[in-house]
Image 1: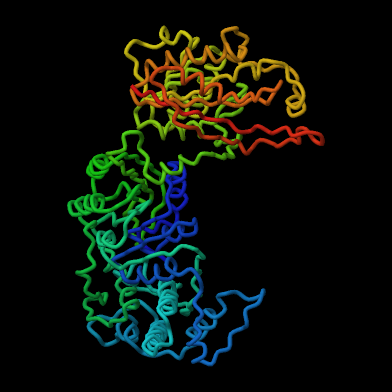
Image 2 (image 1 turned 60 degrees about the vertical axis):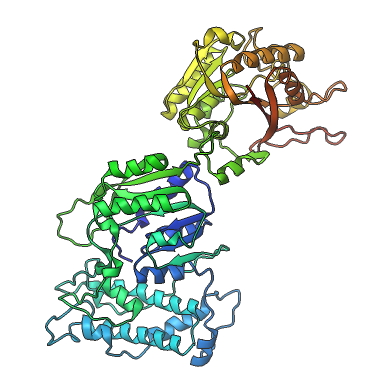
Length: 628
């Protein structure tokens, strides 16, 4: 359907924005639904949809595409019409009954009704205003179909679902034979070639869904009296002073079929009760503020462009006072309703993003649903090492054990707020620091290896992300490396796992990799990766003790650990040894752990066919807290 402000060409932009910001949730609410393109798209993505619009014809479309999850059966009507549809088989579809009814409507005898008498040249001939919206034949077809649908409804031959399904089919078909440039605020003087085609209804495509969706025909503010707990609130209000109702007055009349009093050259119906506050700059800002204050949302996305009448500084003022704000932009070719050529075609579409922040949440900026998601004790990931998802793995992969920035970002987001500082005393190639850049946090990293820090800097340039503070040095002397007065909010680190990589590979490790040589982090004796277990544990403890001096009270420490295979009668569960050792530090408490499982690694039949030898693709993330 031709519709001002339709977001059909921007669906990818909106969806990608939601994905890039890792916006989670189940409920998507569209308060200015229009033709429903955005709501339909997110229904296809699996969301529970809430949609509303002041225009009744829009409500009709939402009743079809959003509320309905399966094709109507038309059981009573088919029996009344003595139509025997094909029995459903593998070769028929569940829309077969709908097709039969649509076919019946397309073959009705035409009548001269309200549309013919008021919006066709034949019907208005001799009147004060001759109108040319539809050919006489198409106007009579609209009348016949609309009257028949209403007749069936009054005779109780249609249930609500069936009624709106047929009405939606008619609403969808009318714009394709209307003699307009895009809106119904005026008709063309000469016939558009599309207007000369015969009106034909098509079967609306129903989007299958297991969710229960709700649609409304009320002012958006009033939706919040009936709906609570919205995950994503999407707003696409009018951008200019032109009201939508007069632009689509004929569709409103066909939808309501109230045969209203009309006036003027265009045959306009009254629309006082359908005026939008957003068609005025001052009232629009006021209404936007009321929506923000009144609605119960976790994430709000406002679609607006650089031609909009609401000043950007006023929009941002409202958003910044309510939570965390970001803006994304994209050029696009907008829809024009006329062809006078006096409008610029290209505009900047902007998505203003507001994340609602619970002021009682002192730990992070996450919503309740995001908080719950992180608490899953096992995190299974399938991070690619290629393309954009690889975060320049071809560089970072020169480190024996690089951590995916996406993974580290989850910990950064959970244990800090925007603008806070994260310390990694074993930064390697900078997975933690890249995560800080992605999350708008400050990062401080330390590593023995200049080579790894250089790789981190190359990675930042490759990715186009800001470099964080990267220091070459031994964290055993961290008190000499960090500036006096430095305070950090979170410690996130992945230390070497003792001598795991520094010894020659044998047995299953050799079979798996085909590599027998050792792959130490560095060749330095002070590298924890080259130490025997007891020395490793004592050195790690000393580094954590010194690091914790810079950590704020109640700040968390997250330490990645991978266990070794059992050997010589010992369990070799390194995570248990580390937990015991770090709990020797005063004022440090153990708060639990998460398990990270990298599902991209290939399983090997270790021990086959003689003994059990586990594939160890998981790592523990030990969580501690500084209590004072």
